[in-house]
Length: 354
Length: 101
Image 1: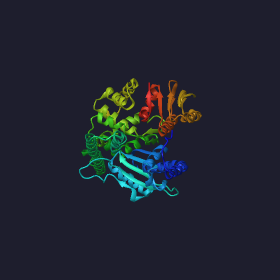
Image 2 (image 1 turned 90 degrees about the vertical axis):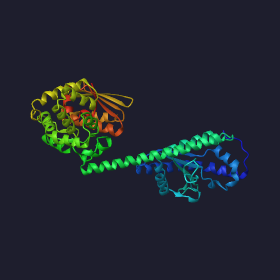
Image 3 (image 1 turned 60 degrees about the horizontal axis):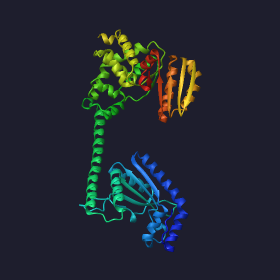
Image 4 (image 1 turned 135 degrees about the horizontal axis):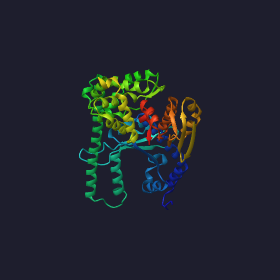
């Protein structure tokens, strides 16, 4: 329902111009949003949300009723179309801003970096607002960029204060400022954690590349970096050569848990396992597929048979093998049958009798 | 070799009956193409009556797994017998599928 408002003819004209152009605003909204989404995705920049809205009729009428005299035409209003990009990290706000700068013409005179307007001893609304333009559309629009925490604060402040129409007690304003200060700190801390993690990953990758594997503890990141060196490739190729089999590359990440479960602590330990047990793993594979016509294997055959060889050699027996397959494939009685079969087969293999 | 496909709500169950050797794999490749249409959902390969699987059969299973991975679905291999489980293990295929007893 459109509220009855007392608007002068000048404001009525702006409202008519708005209504005439509303379909085009909605088209531009979708075009701009899609461009932003695609550009951020291409840059690998993960954001929490991209929101957009075209100002509603009542909201515009209300604004014109209050300060319509400030605007000579609809083109003077820069917030008819508004978009908001909400980032996870504070450093990403600037990255989003640079993407926006590349995509659209920026009206620098009217764009505001509200992150910089605060005095050193005041805390509050932090957000970057760009007024933008695209070709073939005479109206400007606004893109706001801020973090998830800044967004949370702004919404709280907006909902509980600005719209209530009553005078805000000082105590409330002080509490909101305190929260803003705290969230600013939290944003910085999140950012620091990310920087430290990136730094840790770089150092680990350098250690892996330089071959100092004994110094690298096994975790998700280090194991992933290690796999880039294709440490099981030689064993897999040797096994495949038996039957001229093709090797299907699959993720070996599930073996991280197995390597940890059998007590390996560093990437050096995995490297030693490959060095010491590749012959045993090869003998297991030979026994199993050497006399078959199976000519397809997965790249997990190497780590699987290495673990089997190791578990059997250290006396882990049926329970050890079953535990491994339970971890990899989920618990199953059938894993016991496989473990029994492997235990039986291994008795005849040279590596077990050395 | 026979394949009986039932589908419901974007998911499919296929009963594989017989020996999945090389000629049979060619024979039923069309059925696996049909199954791949459900790659966004859950595809259950019911192997209760599957007696044998060759490399060609493994390739069919794998192609379905790839289609499911690309579309966010999954392939469940159900009730494989001891020999087929052993083939899965020997080739490193065991942890590529969700296997149900």
